[in-house]
Image (cartoon, rainbow, N blue to C red; front, side, top):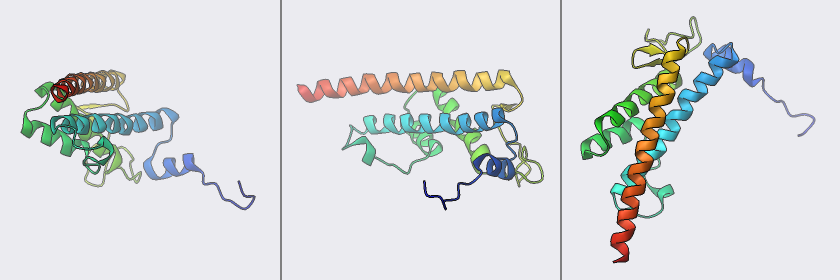
Length: 162
């Protein structure tokens, strides 16, 4: 690193901008975003396999959000309703922590007055049971999508080898 380089105070910036004054709050905030990223990639993967794996996955609809992928899954009738409902709830949660918080005057409320960090009616920042439910349900959705992708990919490979 250059002796003149200025390294920003990342923790201070997060505290100031988003009101994340505790390490646990920052961890939960990152978890909300990380779970959405994982589920988004898997949801797009389901659509890619359903489309017959047209080209490399990396080139397939890279700008699709979790909410957009979930809507396409529903229109196509892919995955079970419970899994699609989890995807919607995680997308809504991610949007509440990534798009609405401002840190002023109250980091737990957005400009529009909506609460930040709500998952299916519970607050993941203050209720450990709600955080555990988010974790459990997001993992169930990920497992369901991995299983769907594996089964359909295998069937596609079998058809192509005949």
